[in-house]
Length: 370
Ligand SMILES: NC(=O)C1=CN([C@@H]2O[C@H](COP(=O)(O)OP(=O)(O)OC[C@H]3O[C@@H](n4cnc5c(N)ncnc54)[C@H](O)[C@@H]3O)[C@@H](O)[C@H]2O)C=CC1
Ligand SMILES: CC(=O)C(=O)O
Ligand SMILES: [Mg+2]
Image 1: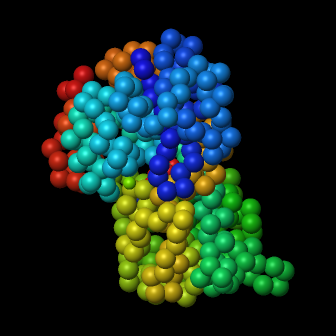
Image 2 (image 1 turned 180 degrees about the vertical axis):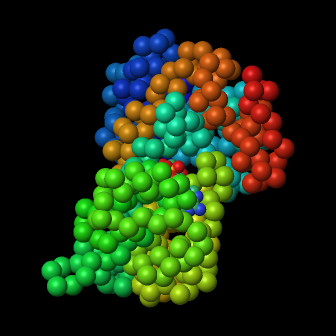
């Protein structure tokens, strides 16, 4: 198979879909790799390393899209990239379609076979191709939140860990999944007071076992979310219903009653966000104010630590890339129900139920495409 690797073009996105080691792995299975020159340059993965791993270099994304049987990326295709997709071509990347009707329409129109990293499931449960980026973004959420609590960034001017004689800041984490757990580790690490909410009591039990009385676990409902948010200095949003638009747990009214200078970090923004007041921002302009509350809603947080993130992502994506290339997409999906769960759009149809429901399309099961 001819596999194409374009350079990412989203704002401040420096990750790359395949490392030279991943290119070498695919080459060793007899596949040809077409890499856009400079794809990994921003994180010191040179063209020479890609060539040594077996890739042929081309200078433009257009050349990659025009000939490759499978495109491997990181972020959802931008409008210029959607326009270059062809019927039957495999697109293997994050998509986050439920909050994104324009991208969805473009992928439907393309006729391509679009496999979303974020809905591929794992034999042990969970979402193993989302998990590494959720680990990164969860950890970064506390870093970003702490920075934006500084006065010069619009925050109330507190140090999350406090100092002897002055209380620590209060971090509230919505969702005790991968983002929530990694945010919690960092928040506990800097000495903040931490409250974590989830609807899944087993997730709260797991955190309670590890962190004991250093954290407060709370069952999530409208009342407990409101109580926690109104007392918070920093709120991290990390809830997810796989594939679906994020539930709006924090209303505009709650935001208007938060402490002035409080910060919200809506990690769930790639699925539309869990604060009613959220809209996606970029690393170039990461925050905006709603009243006196700083909103940080960057939809590609791991792009800021692109080298760490690229290696973590490739560890999770390469085995399915090899299966897709070796077997072709139909056989690879027939053989693996977890990979099949990644099929979101195929031959002009929406094949992921939550996406179809949230965006008002007819749902066609992935099985009918095989
Ligand atoms: N902005 C960015 O750069 C990034 C965003 N993300 C996003 O972060 C979000 C979270 O991802 P993960 O932690 O991997 O998901 P996860 O599935 O591990 O955890 C989500 C948690 O939310 C909980 N939840 C669902 N409804 C809830 C409710 N009403 N109240 C409280 N908890 C609720 C679930 O029970 C689950 O424990 C996703 O939207 C993901 O795409 C992930 C990585 C990077
Ligand atoms: C998951 C996601 O949105 C990201 O890594 O950018
Ligand atoms: Mg998007």
